[in-house]
Image (cartoon, rainbow, N blue to C red; front, side):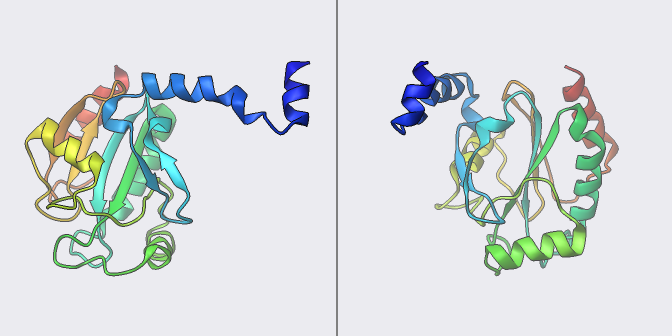
Length: 185
């Protein structure tokens, strides 16, 4: 009866407040950030990925490592049902190799590589304008991205496990082994 009354008054959103507060309280600090989704600039809270193993990657469309999108998408397709999520963060920090706007980047990623894993609006992953997620990843690992397609692995509990250089490909045996080990826990 209470839900019907609140719905009639347009106050249904108040029922969600305790649930949202509970979600934020149980969200690991490293994921407790919001970023705009690349495709439509809708804000997304990374807490939606709590309980998953996350591979965070800074990307660029015009880099020698750009072909890693293909391997990242294959890895995501193969392991997402086991709990892997890949989070892509386009950045123009290295060599100015991501000059486009969100629509251009989203179109390139999908049309060229069929990227379906979550991608977020372009942001800085190093320097004075570093986004808050990357600031936490750098703090946790002591390693700042040196170039595009640098990777960080976060376990299901929000613990940052490892950082991987740009030359570490998505099919690298150690990377895949680390991901599978985190998925098994």
